[in-house]
Length: 325
Ligand code: ACO
Image (tube, rainbow, N blue to C red; front, side, top):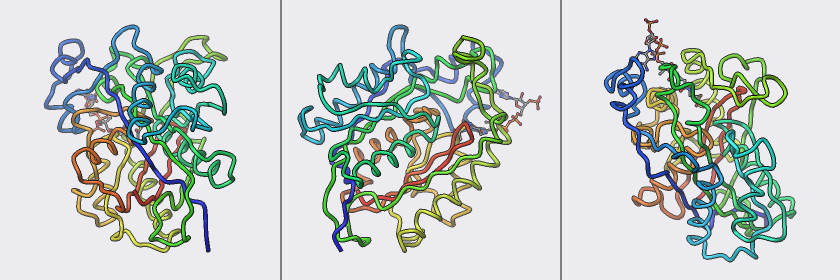
């Protein structure tokens, strides 16, 4: 049976040049490199400088992905940007990117699912492609999480960073079995009752301000391992495959301890979980494509590999996606 598959035909990423180390943060709040590294795995993160916006980062990652895919802007039907930190409340980052790359047709919009945004965006892109409403889609995860931090709160400000990553997806015919290249399935979940575990204490219709990120870290941690492992198992099962078939797990980069605990729960060697947490921190919707890019560049992820993407974030939202690279 012939099916439509969303195949990745290019990827790109961009990190701001400014690097903020744990030691620098320790000069302004009561923390240490040792505390941050041992509890999270984070050593440094990239931070956008004043005037550098989410759209700037998104644009550069998009240009890199389009160069990699060797496509012209006229070939794009749709731009989706996963972000929680848009330049303005409206319009979307996606329409700003559309304008700056010179795309004058098609559609562009943002998806907001916090750290799960890239998985949600991939699900939307894949469904647009399968419904034949778009054949070439630019999917971007881009964040300036540093702008949502309360830089006097040591429990949150040490965790996050800025960056962007992008994929170009294109419709292709597949056989409908596990030998195909492209997205096999996406699994999305949310539980709005868990709002208080992770939220921003502001917004246009409440305070009229942007607000700061607030989190009950221990609670988020507990939900993360269980929810992520469950969504990975659901995604793999749905394709008639098993966990041992997966070549690479590309997780949302929240905390090295979450990655290690998830690997243990699934009985997968930790080396098969791509980790960039040490250098990037938690870049929310950008973390999965940033980690993908690192593993593609260093040759770990190769064409034909089975790759599992997963994330969890505010909402709570979580999900997974299985694809053959
Ligand atoms: N430096 C030094 N001490 C700190 C710091 C810091 N940066 N932050 C907290 N502490 C202190 C606390 O005040 C507390 O002190 P106390 O015992 O005197 O009260 C002590 O360290 C222990 O705090 P806990 O919150 O119990 O520390 P824990 O081991 O749970 O680690 C952490 C905290 C790293 C946030 C962890 O809970 C975690 O990673 N949770 C997952 C949440 C997450 O990653 N969220 C990201 C967004 S959601 C997502 O992306 C999945």
